[in-house]
Length: 146
Image (cartoon, rainbow, N blue to C red; front, side, top):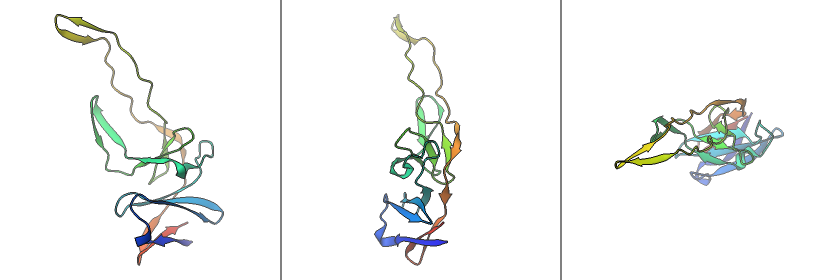
């Protein structure tokens, strides 16, 4: 079933629209100039309004203190409990960052020594997958395939 969401010129970069199709609420997002994502407005974790959450690019790191933005799909973060969902696949990721850990520091002959250095934890896939839908532009209209 094809559903017209809006005219392309009425759907600015950064906009989101929540539409009702076949009894389901679906959020349609324009993230980049020509990047569209559609995801069901229901968090699989506890049923929260997923599309009311915030969009975040993914950060990747190969070592502490250095990071870069990932070129892949951003994540949508549920406003209730922070579960993160890949906007292209719906795959969940474990919410939140690990707790910050403190370390004892001493000064020895002008050198600062940190006792116990530890690398940050990797982003782990969670058990939930949000329902996603294809979106495309056809003759100046944003079309949702639901």
